[in-house]
Amino acid sequence: MQHIAMLIYPGFTALDLIGPQTAFSILEDTKIHLVWKTLDPITTDSGITLSPTATFDTCPEELEILFVPGGVAGTIAVMKDGEVLDFLAARAEQASYVTSVCTGSLVLGAAGLLRGYRATTHWAFREVLPLLSAERVDARYVEDRNRITGGGVTSGIDFGLRIAAKMRGEAAAQTAQLVMEYDPDPPFQAGSPESAPAAVVEGLRGRIAQPLAQAKEAAELAAVRW
Image (tube, rainbow, N blue to C red; front, top):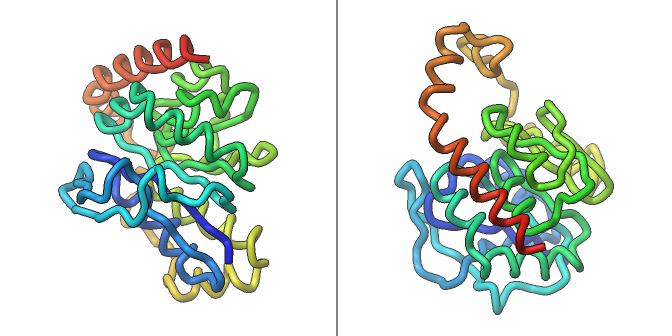
């Protein structure tokens, strides 16, 4: 049995977690732990509520995968939460893969787990990575030794299938992809700043200007811990 610990926390983005969690859940001989400080229900940034299945104390110490989802306000909060960062640093020592999707990589970085590693995150927050001593890569999926990071939100499905292939082989991952009927055909070519209309990109940059500044501040504070 291989154990997968997936951190959940108030205000994280549900799809960051659900994409890879669904891929992992289709694999045989795996046990997924949704981990938080307590077993109290957690509300995501879209209003969906999830219940943790393990606490920091009861989460297995030896893990195949340690995973962190992203978000915005909730993510910035846990970047400054010493209890969360200490938990991640401790479990990372015995995890086969230390991973994230979206701005979850900023949380890994705040825990000191991306120092000297190539990594990615949501495109709007990639400039924060160097503040966490990570090498910024503008990509949807980045693997550097046992650190694996995914880009924004929907990249979690690609990410989950890639890791499923590493764990169980391509046929198992392809089976998971088929079960999920993951065959994307988006209605618009607007899923990246390169393909989206310039006005849309600039509008979103304006909306995230303040959270981006807050994430940079949290990164600088986190670096003092190391």
